[in-house]
Image 1: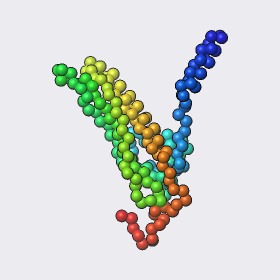
Image 2: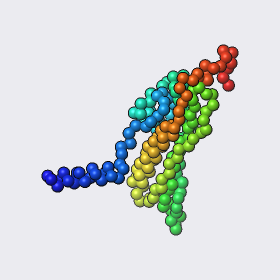
Image 3: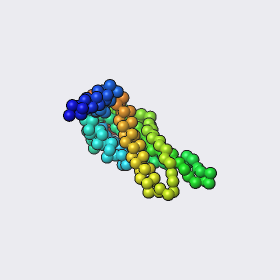
Image 4: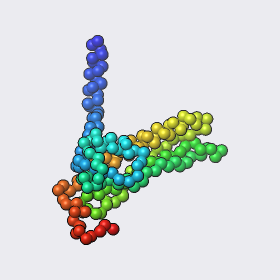
Length: 177
C-alpha cells in the first residue's frame, strides 16, 4: 500500500515537473460568431469547440461580433515513394481548410487564411483494409488539429465593440454590391 502511494506521488511530481497542463478554454475576444459557407466535415466539431469555449453561434450576421466564412475544405493524397518495381510504398496525405473573417462593422473581409495538415503513411497492398483505416484516422487527427489551429488564429482577433455595423452606416438609398 505504501509503495503504491509513493509511485503515485512520484508520477504526480513528474507530471508537474515536466510542465504538463490541461488544455483548458481558449481566450476568445468575442462572444457571438456567425459561420457562413459550405457545410464541411468539421462543422459539427467546430461548433462544439466554440460552444465549449463560451462562444454562441448565431443564425444571423447582424447578431454576431465576428463573421467566419469557410471558403473550402480539401483532402488530398499524393504518392511519396515507389518501390523498385513501381509499387506505391508511401503516400503523403494533406488536409486543408481555407477561411476568412470579418468584423461586422466593416464591409471588408480579412485575407484568406489556410490551415493545412500533412501526414505520411506507408502502404502495402496485402494490408489494404488496415491501411484504409489508418488513413481515415490520420485524416481525423488532421481535422482535430485544424480545428485547434483555427481557434488559435481566432484568439488573436479583437472585434470592435460597440462600433456601428457597416450595414447601419449606409444611407437608406444605398444598395449593397
